[in-house]
Length: 180
Image (cartoon, rainbow, N blue to C red; front, side, top):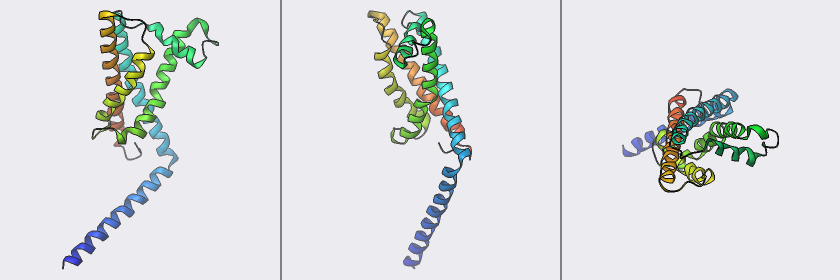
């Protein structure tokens, strides 16, 4: 009797794994599913980057962030040579594009290794890691209280970015066509 229960259990597990494997294969083979996942990542990145931009604009009101700091991205990508008079604007466009394409891809691929049960909570440590590079790369010589405000606002902004990116992943990935 115990053997029969064990074999039923094993057959049930095998049937479930077979069904999951077949379902996963068709999802991963679907070009439409991949395109929709890319769209989910871009939407999540746009939402997160918009929130981060609002926080950075708030920091600029306290003289704790210089909007011209975006020009460094233009210089790093070499776009200053093409658009020398609009380096900060071009840098901001690069900033938005990075927020919409590679960072969402990193969260989607590495999110399974981050703590948390949903992508929204996984986005918090992800945002923290991004903040460490941002805080150093965009540091513009702030000292004293301005430095503290800069670090506070940029940290809050990056946590908001990671959380909102993950929240969009969670919300839109529950649609049957997505793979995230």
